[in-house]
Length: 128
Image (cartoon, rainbow, N blue to C red; front, side, top):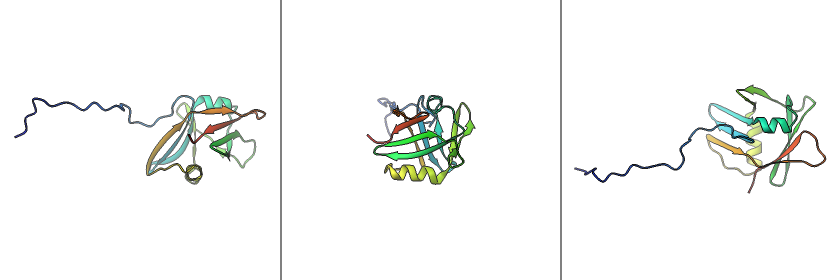
């Protein structure tokens, strides 16, 4: 029989196991129940609160800008944020930056820089 008198309870360091939008960031969710990119209020404000956005790549950064044409990706309302549901887009971005993901991936990127000379555009640092 096991003596539990000296039993120590494990205290996990990570208390929050949920995946939500962090203040000021862009969250990528790749899950069987939905693949999406979630934009925080701060990012949306920097982009000029657009209805559509477009993406580009530059070394280590994902460039996101407001789009005035139909080529952009449409933003949908979700709680206090806006979101893009587009599995191929999310896979392409994560693959481009060689970010490993599985069927339950969720990560917020919060290092955001405004781009000099471009209105309604930000550069999101994707690599360390």
